Length: 191
Image 1 (cartoon, rainbow, N blue to C red):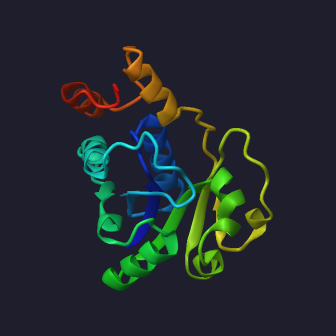
Image 2 (cartoon, rainbow, N blue to C red):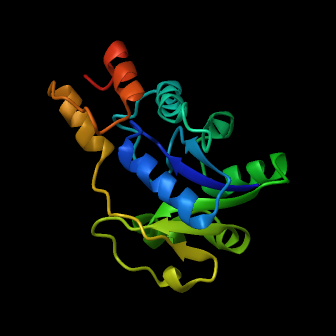
């Protein structure tokens, strides 16, 4: 099975993530896309990060009605911070029958040389890259294991969504309806 892995803090997951996952699925002939909820990104500060189980719950709600998508909490049981190469190694051992690709933004492609063992990632996994607003060009775009997909540059950010929630503004249409219901029911992101 061809599986696209979409890593992120998903703080919270929003329609931009789902649009990118859909386009990656359709354009790359994937069988599934797994949203891998990262407890802690080693390149980002942990400030304003909702508890990992709440973020995972929101991702599950977002993908619940789509057989192509799945939420993954694989990194919850791995040492923190989470390094992509370590997660990929565990997934490859656990699911030998799957062919994994990484779905990343063009901004992350530029930062890839800062990732732990990034050469091993390029050696063993395909990268499905989607455009990000204001991202610089990367020399890796011409790498034979990197595929740039034709997707819109979506400038919806979880930061904006959290700010709107704190200010009591509606985030309708920025997140799936079920995600909105859970955020409001639990009063998430309001502090």
